[in-house]
Image 1 (cartoon, rainbow, N blue to C red):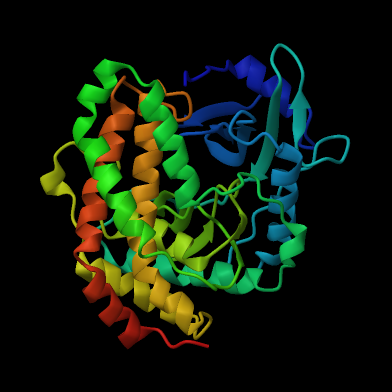
Image 2 (image 1 turned 60 degrees about the vertical axis):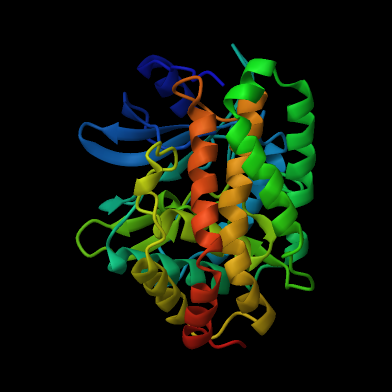
Length: 360
């Protein structure tokens, strides 16, 4: 999917629809995300807001999505959790719908000064704080009514759905792509069979973030204290092992998501232990069944991201933003390599979880 470029004039015109002081702002694109267009809004050198275009091709129910975010932010406010505020539009809404020249949906949020995010880490303090804040996030949202939240992407982490989409992509892909991706395709088919035998049943439904990669957590620059989770678009009902597995895949692996040298892809046991110790700081909040499902989550989530990237590659890159033609294939191979390494650590994960987490 191509990246659209916006001029400062266009972005300032958009800000005119929000209830903020009228002036000429400066902008810096934030490019870590794959889906939305995101800009840091500045007055001179001072960062003030985050302006974001919600990708309605990926999230067609923007009203439902923003309702989820608005509902969750009412709960995500605590001494140990930094509050984020949605800036209202001039007519009192929480997003602006642009009709011309193209249909687009924009929102504006407060910027947390002195914060930073990390794509990867080798620091156990960051890993532990990530665990702590994810636990806090879930405990705060335990008060939320599940019925108030819509599924913005139905069956988002459903292995069966991703398998079906993969099979369709295989049937429609060009012979060249099938040949180039043959190793990834072979791994996907074999691992699908393995994971289908590992799936868990009868787990509690929670309001989950559903995209808890490390760079969706904000930290203080000086002390590495975790502040809050950002990018709440995928916030909806789910199981805790979804959020656990997504965090593990980006915290215990110190390589980037599209790393092509697979020798650099690791499962760092010390970082895993620190992350689980961070979860435990919150006290018991998971059931025994949820704790038993966590190693499955640590294998499932990198595999799901990998098969989605592979499917998108076979479909000619229509979902994720790519910087070069084979980036989705590189992502899938990297994620599959981590999946393989996580599978080899299931017994280790079981041991650490049993030693560290107490069920409710």
